[in-house]
Amino acid sequence: MTMLQIELPDSTAQAARAAGLLTPQALDRLLTEALRRREAANSLLSIADRVATAGIAPMTMEEINAEVKAARNERGPLN
Image 1 (cartoon, one colour):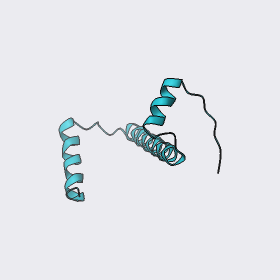
Image 2 (image 1 turned 90 degrees about the vertical axis):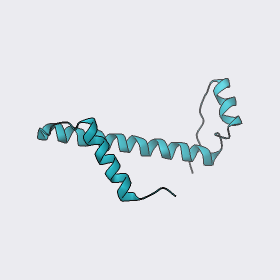
Image 3 (image 1 turned 120 degrees about the horizontal axis):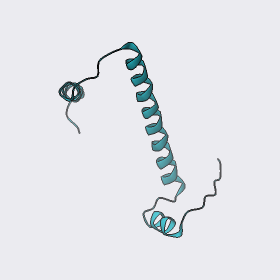
């Protein structure tokens, strides 16, 4: 385990503590999720670079919406 010490404005620390966000478990979840989002963003940017290099035309909003709808239909209804 690694111990971290951070400095926050008092108001931020008080609000985070009141919301239960300063526990080791909550901080682990927050940091894990932030890392996952960063990895997803980097992956998306990498794909965008490859698409631009390949000269593939951008999709229209209608095409994007159709792809999203197809992916959602493929996954099925949310439980």
